[in-house]
Length: 489
Ligand code: GLU
View 1 (cartoon, helix red, strand yellow):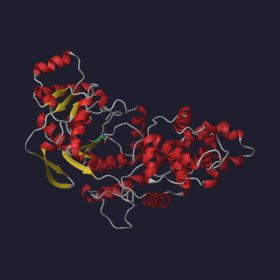
View 2: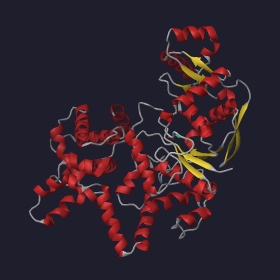
View 3: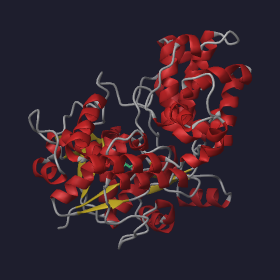
View 4: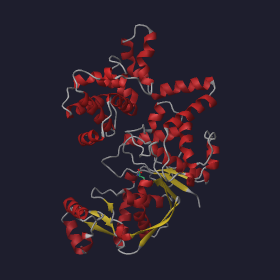
């Protein structure tokens, strides 16, 4: 048997460091076992998926050097590798389940489902589908379909018995089927849900080991049942604990930078990031952390991953990065890599005329553009605050802007302006009055290169980090404020 692993990212936003971690574990597992690693784009959520995000995922995994054997760009024998291009396959399979009586049409309206759930909540029960449409016979279904009533297709779940779950990192466990929901497999928009698509694809793509994030562990019984319904052999499951902040909270953008491309843009080396993430699956002593890929593979074992959650300690990553820069780079190699980094980050010529018009002598340029290439800049409270804007409103503006950057997909110059204006309008603030404070937050100065262009140049991730720094300088929100402000954003 050839070991085949896969990463199945959904292209809905910036590629997250958590995806790099899961991808790397899949990659290393396949390498260690002389197997293959597959990239599959899980874009069944039509509303949230974007090409921009898919391109960024490919770019960031490629930057890390996690080459895949099959994928949407390079093809393979099990394609297509984009779920939106496999709809016929899912349709065929859902028909099969309907024929065999393992799935059923559900015509319940969203209102009915909401009432059902709120009743269940009131009765302190788990919220799950109550099986109302199981009572429909063939004729009822036919009639409803003729009437063109909207429907979804759900899977049937046994009433009695238990599901046995095996996981590579955990003791075997059981869950009673009565607790498992009759999952929607096919949505009213004609797209499959993650559950159906994922199982069908893993089978057809001959995936032998499903190594994925722990957030999917509760879905596993449904997947196991689908394998049984189709009469397929199930793969091995391995649910990896999620990355955590040093305070053990879930790694989130609000606390730490989490975009893979942020690390690239800040000048982390891919080999350092890979080395750092791989350490979670190694059991080694202090002082042995810096390792080539071969050495990482030698001691790699998923069982070493701490179930309590691997801690993403950015200081350790920085230290490792500095070791690579100092130990592995000759002066020449260092300068070449530095130049490549500066140029690859983005072409400074997009700001050429603005820089030129602010230059008397060339020596003016370095201080002027410094903020574009720095990780963090110094800002002071007095520079950030302005007489025209109430401090609390300015904090609120920064807060909602940070939160909302997650929702913008493409980061264009005009889009950035519109985005900031909208946030100002939401708080009924005069946009012009706000500009100087945003300026300081981003550039560190009251006067500099044009704001929106600069934000575009430094990118969304760094913009978010700068705003976070500004917010911390004038006062992070209290828990109560966060709650109130979250409602707005
Ligand atoms: N599309 C899922 C995700 O984005 C993949 C989960 C899985 O690997 O099964 O996390």
